[in-house]
Length: 453
Image (cartoon, rainbow, N blue to C red):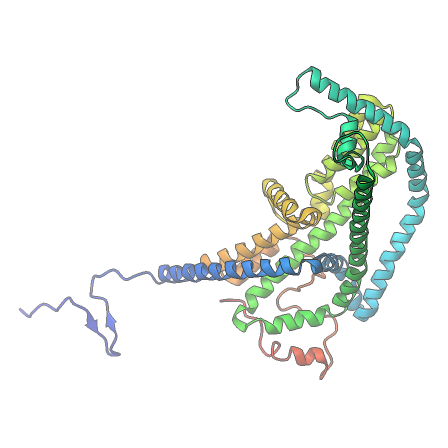
């Protein structure tokens, strides 16, 4: 009998050591997944550091973001029109100018149709305001008296207390001696001047935003194909597939959200105005316009927009019955919106649970006020898309083609997005040889975009 073969490690011809016979061989897929998880952990740490740095930069340069946000919204709204015109061999500069002219024409036409009625209702409201204020003051005082008599947990202040709290009249008498001295009058005048200056600066700032924003948007719309190509050329080759897939997904979601919210706000405003007219509510058009404007804030906006209608119902003698009618009309409008209009118009652009939307609105409103409320949902959708792609592709190891196919199966394709699908033509008209666009993207166009890691 021969000697048994040694059970220790064996050296192969190439000099590498192989595991002994019978020893378990580690799974290659498991090792690869562990390696990917480690890479993702380090990537998350790096991304967190970059986010902190970007947060500091954003805070320092916060003055430039409002016009950029407005410009981005305009680009997302008008780019499908400009792209469609470009497909009909109309230059982007001319197509952008025509889009701007069409928007201005629509606004002017709507203004000419609505302005007379809105002006008449505004004049009626201004004329009836003294009487409405007296009725509102009486209601507030009665409510304050009931809160004291019934010992409510929270005491409702009287109208005079509210007026003293929000006006400078109550704070002018600093020493509470019942008279306002010359020095106190000078201090009050200085405070009023300071308040007026702050108000004027805010109005000027808002005006600058609405002037600079459309100008920036015009240049972005004209140069968007070139910007897209330069962005594609700057992305490393191995990351180009991931970046283009995520960018196209973000373009579809955010663009669909802005366009859908604007369309829904217009439809809800029209339906609310018609409903208020049917119940014979005074100033029905103003109430409907306010409801449509606040409808741009998801979930909480529609109910906030119903408050003016209820107040007008109480103060114009309609009583509880008219206020209930207003609430019923707004509830019907919102049900129609939630079940029929939004699912069609929004095209399922952002898939977020209502609880997530509420938390996002709470965080956005706390951090950035009104702009935070408007941007909370698209920002949360952006975070969801990016983290979802990182998890599926780098942790679970799903191929890029499968992720792209899943997204296309879930959503209706919105043409004319800021970022086109991988492999699509970069623009309707290719750049001329030797032009700036061709020189900037020559390196990026030498090879196809990778679709795998």
